[in-house]
Structure formats: structure tokens, C-alpha cells
Image 1 (cartoon, rainbow, N blue to C red):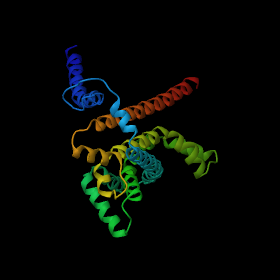
Image 2 (cartoon, rainbow, N blue to C red):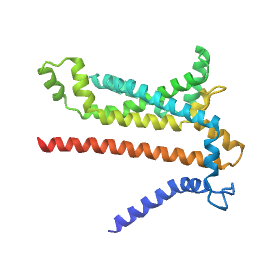
Image 3 (cartoon, rainbow, N blue to C red):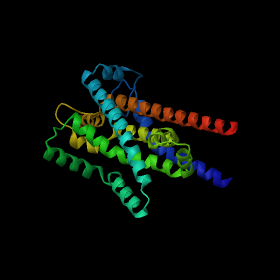
Image 4 (cartoon, helix red, strand yellow):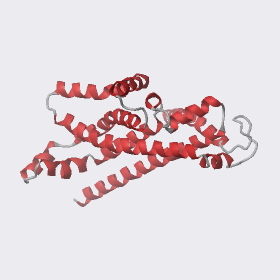
Length: 267
């Protein structure tokens, strides 16, 4: 009982530390006084001002388009990359490929961003939409691989052997055996890539050009000018959007697991 109480208290303290600054920021986004230390009166003026800012709405649209495009492309590349690594039979080759895959995950974002900046400058790619999209795809692919590969490793080779015995070709094995089995990992990789793309700052900061920006870079620019509750309102909406994504992913996984359990019970 004591262990349970201590663990509960510990978790409570951890969640308070994590979420208190966010809720503090959200609370003062409704402050009419325009300050972060004295709440005067409830207002939605900061949200109205936010939605009347055409430039900021364009930046939101840019961020969403970049996140969706990079997530879709990186999910496709990451799934086939994970399958390719899974098919490698020699352990040292598989470990080498995984090490190369993990470089972009463990490397500091500043180094990655600077590397992309140098590469785009040398190749002649203009900084802007294309450079940001390519960068987000590059650092999202390893994340998708990491999320998909465990599902592939869980899959029994007898499933593929059975499909081959029934006359299935490589395409049928891929589309009717492998992809349906690893679907939870694909969804997990997609949502992880989406959230990483939405909140990335360090890499995006290096590869954005004049006339193009994303929300993370714009919030940084606004924060440097001084305290503005527009930042609070924008951050609140971003946090709520992230919560909706997490809940959506949770319901998708729960629904799929429920179907799997139902099918197992019928058998």
C-alpha cells in the first residue's frame, strides 16, 4: 500500500511539473490585462486578434501542409526501409543499417540543421518550402523505421510461409500479409512524424528562407519581441490540437485491438 501511495505521489508530482507551465500559459491567454502575472478579467480578445492575423494564418497553413506532406512521404519511405532492414539476415549488417538509421535521431538538432543548410547551399536548393519539407522528411524517416520495425519482428515467419504455400506472390504477401499486420506501427510512425514535424524548431530555423516560416520559428520570433498574449493563445491552440491527435491515435489503436480480440474470440 505504501509503495502504491509513493508511486502515485511521485507520478502526481511529475505531471504537475510537466503540465503546470502549460496550464499557466493557457490560463493567461484569457487575461484582458495583457500580462503574465496579474489576471484582470476573462476575455477572448487575444484569440480574435489571432484569427484576424492573416500572415499568421498563412504560417499555420504552411506548418500543417509541411507536417502532413512530410509525414505521409516519410511514412511510406520508413515502412519500406523497415521492411528492407527486416529482410536482412546477417545480424551485423542489420545492426549497421540500424546504426545509420539512428544517427539522425541521436544527433543534436543544431548539427542536423547546420548540415542541411550547408547541403542545400552547395546543391543550390533555395531555402523555403522545399528545403523545410526535405529536412522534415529526412529526420522523420528514422522515427517511422523505429516504430514499424518492432511490429515486423513480432510477426511470425510462418505467416509468410503459409501465404507462399497458398501461391501468394511478393506483392500479395506485402499487401495482404505484411502491411495489415504492421498497420498499428504504421499509424504510430505517422503520428510521431506528424508531431515531430509540427513542433520542430532547431532544424527548421536553419533551413527556412525569406518569405517562408513555420509556427515554431514564428513563435520564437514573437517571443523575442517581448511578452504578448498572442503567443499564449497560439500555444494553447497548438496544445489542444496535439491532444486531439493523441486521442485520435488512441481511439484508432483501441478500436483495432478490439477488433483483433473479437476475431480471436470468434476463432
